[in-house]
Image: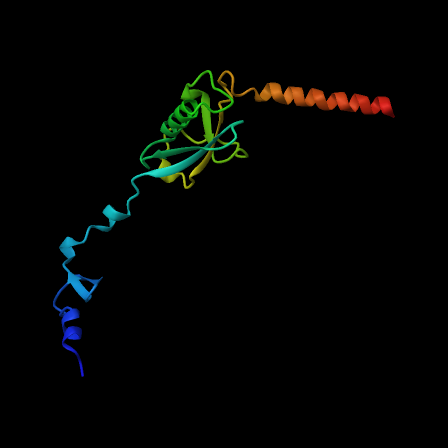
Length: 161
């Protein structure tokens, strides 16, 4: 025998609403009351991790997906300076930095690209090769020092032989 509550929980076929599970069973909600799929599936903010060259950990930036790579660079540098991270940056011009997918990526991202289209939430910020900022990126000097240091060991090895 069918109970009365079972008959009342299912809506008649003539309703064009969606079934929603409710405490008492399933109920019908008119389609007009449901939000459009674009409104509740659209991302409003992104959490992005930007590791700055020679820094210990990433800077976390929350931004709109409609912002560009230039906006992300500017925000990451501002947060880095505000948090007084090491090594300290004397110059904070965002045009002196490039954003990459990783530290092993040679190609930098274009400044006018939207964040939502990048496909990643983790990035690497390094000095622009054309205009390096003062105090943060001395990569060429460090490389020369490392090479000269290695050559000094080679000379010592020749002496020992």
